[in-house]
Length: 158
Image (cartoon, rainbow, N blue to C red; front, side, top):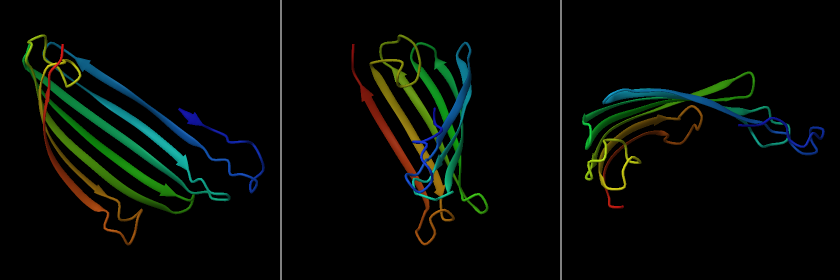
C-alpha cells in the first residue's frame, strides 16, 4: 500500500507527503500443529509543509498453535515485536514495544479446533501481556507502559 506522491505542487504550496506499507506472512498448518510469522514495514512522512521528519515501524509477529483435541481444543501463542523510529534524516529517536498472548479456544460443536474465527460456538480464554517504551519519541511524558489483560469470551451461533 502506498501514497508515493501528493499533488505534485512545489514545496510550500501544499505539502507532498508519502506513506508506504508492505508486509507478508509465511505459515505452516500441519496435522494438529502449526505456526508462522507475519512481518511488515510502514513509513509515513509528517504532514507539515517543509518538514523532512518521518515515522517508521518494523513489526514481527510469530505465532504457534497446537490442536490438543483436534475436534475441540486449540492452544495458541501469539507474540509481537515492534520497532519504532522517528527521524529527520540526520537524527533518529527509537522505541520498542512487545506483546505476548497465550490463548485457549474450545469449540462446543466439535467441528474442528481452531482460533476464535473457526467456529460460531465456543469459549476463548486469553491472557495478554505487553510493554511499550516510547520515552525517547515522546519525552517528558510517562510513556513506559505495561499492560496485563485476561479475557473470557463466549460465543453462541449457528
